[in-house]
Image (cartoon, rainbow, N blue to C red; front, side):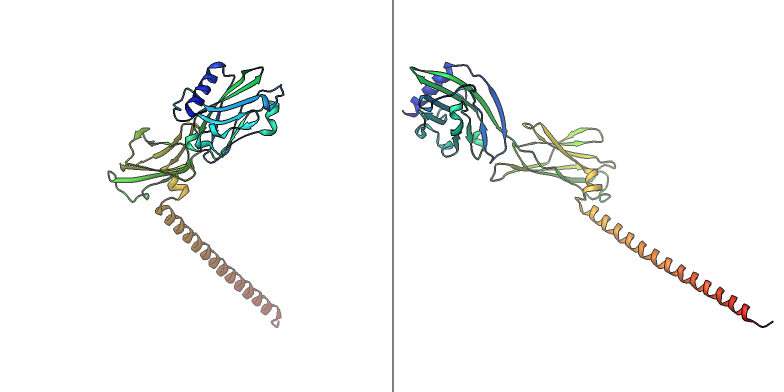
Amino acid sequence: MNRRGSGFLLLFLHILGAVTALEEIVSKPGDNVTLSCIYPGREFSLDSLRIYWQIDGDEDTELCSVVHALISGQDNESLQCNQFKNRTQLLWDKLEDGNFSLLLFNVRQSDVHTYQCVVMQTIEYTRVIHQEQVVLSLAASYSQPILSGPIRNSYSTGEEVTFSCRSDNGYPEPNVYWINRTDNTLLSESYFNITQHPDGTYSVLSTLKVNATSDMQIECFIENKILQENTSANYSEELQSNGTNTGSHKDTAKSGQVAQAAAILSVVILMALLTVLICWLWRRKSSQLVSYTAPI
């Protein structure tokens, strides 16, 4: 059967029956997922089954839509799209119990589709006995943003200063927002760069240039729409806790040196006081001994 013929058959199967379920699956790029299709409560003979996994007919699938096909108990690879070859597998030990789920290996960006499972039985005549749809999306959480800014008190009011915000290993491409927390206004970034890694995830770097004020409170937000996640970093918090700029490291080191010197000085003073006390007690004891032994 040629590609056009198989596409017509699968479109016909799509029209025959109503879809009984719609499942949504979110996967990380590179992971393996199970596309669920279960018809419980019955036992089946594989020789009388035809199982088709396909990309939903409502999508643009002019070239190829067959993800996996099993006919009379045998996988039919001649119908399968090249992008899915050697990447799919039915659960053979569960097929006779009505579990027609499909394993999809090494999920990639091109796998984001709505999938349809169509199960046909060929006893006396061919009929559709079960259908399901599964929506596959990709998503991965972005790391906590690292926010860098100017060193405290190293700038003058009105001077242009630069902030940078970086986050890694997320999917899909995020939205990045800069907010001035002194008046909760949205700021426009000056530079944006996104890099895709071999596993499909992204790293993002955003830069903001603004004129400095005496009470700057800058916040960077990374938004992942699919996961409905927002992670953020605050400029003031970075200066005080994370130490992401040179000023914070220098201040910390200087404070440590001062504390060490103060501790040493305290020990020296304490030893000196103990020495004075011991000398005074010895002299007092000596004078008492002399007074006791003197002749009457």
